[in-house]
Image (cartoon, rainbow, N blue to C red; front, side, top):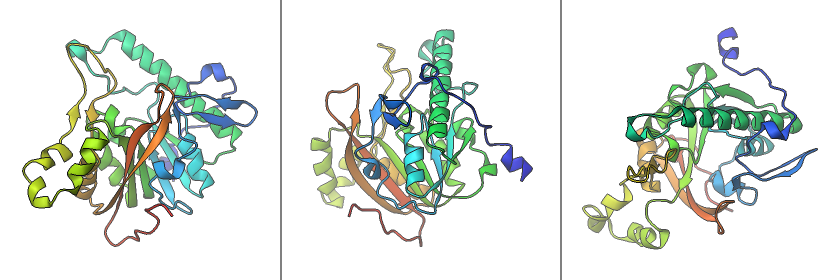
Length: 283
């Protein structure tokens, strides 16, 4: 087990909030309520596709400051939290063909602060979760088999979202949970398309349901940290290709603190054939 154990990060003692960047809003014992970019507190189970996690070993890809990691632990999961370290490269859009030193240093600072937030939270919650750091395209096989893998709104930030899913799928024996933004087609337009007969959709609507939006705009040089707007049908197809053929799509709204209203998200749950599909839908 020495090789496997070596992939896990040693504990990091972090006590000062000034050293942290919180991606999630979290209530921390001894520190109070910490405001982050996303406030998922009211709809955690919706975000996770209503999948039962008690007794499951979970690989959380993109743990950030760890809110979902620790919530999954509360639900009985044994979590391996995977994320970038400050020594790993973020998929920054290379406008003009290059990534500037300023962008690189800014990302390193943010990643370091987010890692610190995870470790501070890990300590105050007395968490048993383990952290592994590295590129999303090189998830170590030494982590070993997991029952469930989760992707919490990170695919839009990845240059190759399918490869990231593939690397996690190689370790996942039961269930993949993928949450992302409904950013391609407004839901009031998108939803009726899904109800049309398949023979109508085949040549027209499917072009919308399965077409990704390439987000970077060269004339504006924005966004610099986002690549794709994916539809739930496209993510569902990704998962089916990877062997998770029993799928469910659900929709929910979450609080994003930079927006005046909650934003629309989707969650795709894919299970390998033959696995129990119970618990996927809200009670």
